[in-house]
Image 1 (cartoon, one colour):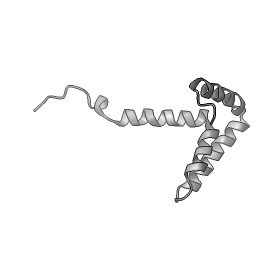
Image 2 (tube, helix red, strand yellow):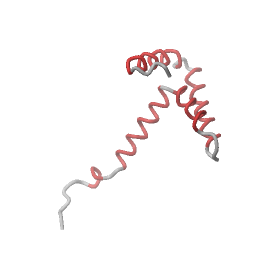
Image 3 (tube, one colour):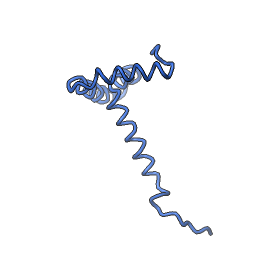
Image 4 (cartoon, one colour):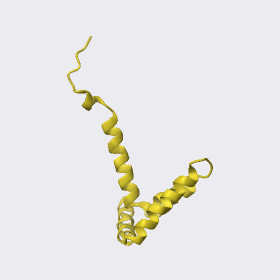
Amino acid sequence: MTDITEPMRSRSPRRTIIITLAVLALTWFIFPAPVASWVTDHCEDGPICPLLQSIADSVDGASHSIGLAGPLEESRDALRTNLGIDFY
């Protein structure tokens, strides 16, 4: 029998899950238009698709209404050019 000396908190997957969800939420906030476009393209059938589409459109609309869309779209275009995927 092995003794586990690490605390339970460091062995738990909860921290990894929270960090992953935080990164996804931040990405959605920074790049709302591509997320809305992706949801439109990939979520066609299913009971949750209309809900996801309305949330994506709402976040995109909020980004436009508070003035974040313009500067973020410019930075997104620069990022895509630097990564070599500017044909999307």
